[in-house]
View 1 (spheres, rainbow, N blue to C red):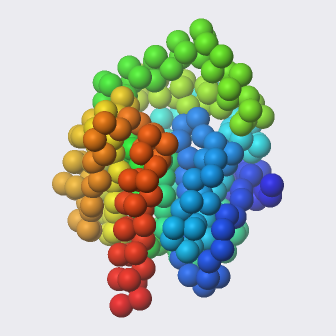
View 2: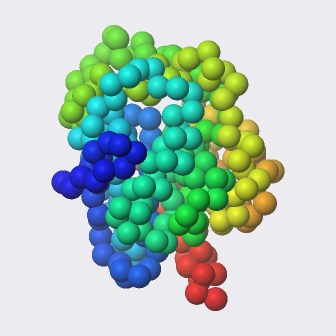
Length: 261
């Protein structure tokens, strides 16, 4: 386990796999309840399948990173992660050619970063079940998660992955359930995305409908490819790992080939 300072916080991170030091690196951005450990062996699978190094880190409040002390977080917390924390982390770890691979909230962060035209510019964006706008089904599912937290052993299960499981849960849950989130959207940033983008979405995603990838397809000017996985829920890399990994490999092959050309 290693730590880096970014955004004024001490964040845990890990390099996974081998790849050319001067080549692109896949930077994985976790979901609203995720962490380095909660990716399990998926970063290693990505590295083996693509031949690239993979960087994973836990955001503030998650995993072994510094806890969040002020809740709820403001509605622009994903913007701050993308526009302040992530650039500092990439600079500190000398990542000059990132390919952003984000899941759920992490997918939103990847899109915000790409749409903000920050340095280093991403060579590609892979968004797994991202949030582009708040839908009723998103907020209903997040409210149901609160019930699970209060009535099941969800806290105990999260405690295996987070130093502060309560903080990790409420960092995500309280923020999304604030009234301000009913009109939350990152659609205004999509027209500024020029990096090749792949969206991976399950047809049975309880946190977002087909409106999410469609918004990206309609508003992002660069090449956008959508992989809709039939019968898949909100966790494509666990529900359908082979199909998800295939879409990631296809994206990276196309991206690296275009870059070399």
